[in-house]
Image 1 (cartoon, rainbow, N blue to C red):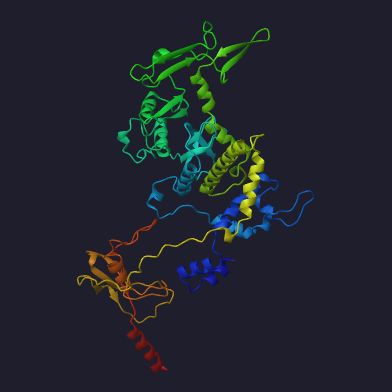
Image 2: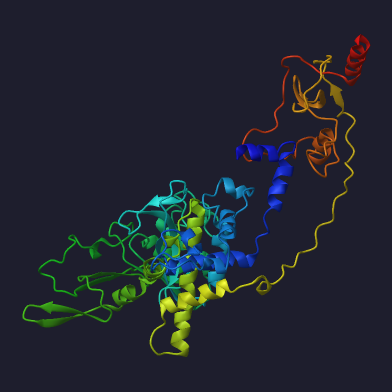
Length: 532
């Protein structure tokens, strides 16, 4: 097989081989990508096959039915599309510094869509979420102790506290990734530590909330990892109230409203409340409540004898217990019920993260469907499985005509093909280290030039440039290497830099080479004819 491939590409340049390979495959259309996602959703609903390829099987085995995916797309076409699935531009300057650069365009588009597709809630629930991924090539992978999925990509999520709709997501790439990304502002302007958990609350709310308006307030609910006195003061200046549990060793927290023991002392009755109000900021209140029940209005405790005791529950604690579960409920809809990501495995880690983001979009769509069900029907509850079947069927029914034609903007005027004049100080100089001999050069030998530009060279380190046009190697090219270097690349200052490998090198003097001339070759041929 390797020999056949070698024979097929013999005598062709690299560009010609790649061009021929590209023409073998049809252009990928938008509806085909959507159909691929629809097939992956169908795989999640019907995981009876041992692998994804079995869904294209044409024969049945006993009680195992044959595959149905072939009705919508061939297996080869599906594999071709998924193989070439890519979301970012590798030439982007951020590609070398942003560890989430592979899925950054998808994340930015989802942030824009989530924000535009839902009304701004009054109360936010902020917490971290996980996209499971055990790939060692995943540069955003982290170890998460005490989590259902211990390895994965961590994200910050801001969800509606009432409906669990995700309004903002951001992939966490490490400690120093967001040190200078606080809403486009200088990090020194914010009092929170740019690398700490509370800073994540600040910059995400800064992105999702509109400009402050007098008399309009929002609230955010956080757990003890994010809550701090510093964060509460900073959010209050942004017209945002902060509700959350707090670690008693936080800087600035009142030591009198702390418990010396983790369990309730015997001399303290259940439901006992200890409260303190900050004198400098009357809006800030600290509460210590001796109970662990998650009841909303009141707590019911069973006492010996089969009786119940009603324990009062402060409204502050009631609001926290009601609103804190926004992100957790979204995770349940995304991972514990129906998850495309957990049923399909890719070798490329960014494709796995992409499927995790698709699960988030599907969960948001179901939340909107559920809220619309409550408003319009009001009877019963929305069926999650029934909802998932609808978009899956709709995606598989899409055709090319369902997509609007892309309106291409007018192309910029084509620059003149005539090269700009080259300065007189830049001329081709023949290297004196080349001699001519009476031998024939092999046709397979790589081209070498004996000309160099003395003005661009640095002493004995020279820039060798060709004086010939090579349209066979570079189709459409009508310039020599000398013209490309000086006219298009402006004496090499604007030459394209390679993503990997070495740049163009200046070569010094090496071993002397001898180059045959056409006149010598003709003389050699005449001598041979004469000898006969």
